[in-house]
Amino acid sequence: MDTANVQYLSNEQGALTNVLIPIELWKNIVSELEATHLLKSETTKLRVLEAQRRDKGFSLNPTDSVNLEPVSELSDKQVLALTKLQMQPDQDAQLSKLLDLQQAGLLGENECSELQKLMQIYQEALLKKAYALNEAVKRELIEPLSNESNF
Image 1 (cartoon, one colour):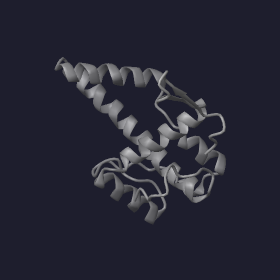
Image 2 (cartoon, helix red, strand yellow; image 1 turned 180 degrees about the vertical axis):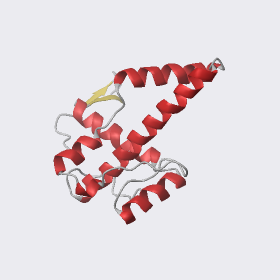
Image 3 (spheres, one colour; image 1 turned 90 degrees about the vertical axis):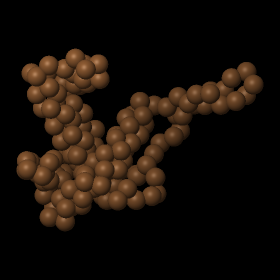
């Protein structure tokens, strides 16, 4: 991880208050944190491990099988691209809006259905990203955020 351009800011008393980092470093950190958070779920861990054993796609839920191209068969460039996978901005904005409505208890029946679809897209993207991050670390394309195993 390139930390050459990291800047530390302190207050008048000399206490460290902020850190400025390059946006690419920030994106890498966020991607790994998202993957780590996702893999805290025992169910998700089991699905990812199962997918690794059979070396192909994995199901997002027990009744809905989603076939994903095996990450191990992708080029380095494709794997790295998947590590940066995010929802489309309009989908992300709509998901945030619907989650706010749900939090406020104002979600209608149609909106509930749309929220479920967007959550499915979000979860699929996170799973793909987690699987790609794992493959990228295996290939030594990127360094792990920590030396501890996430599995």
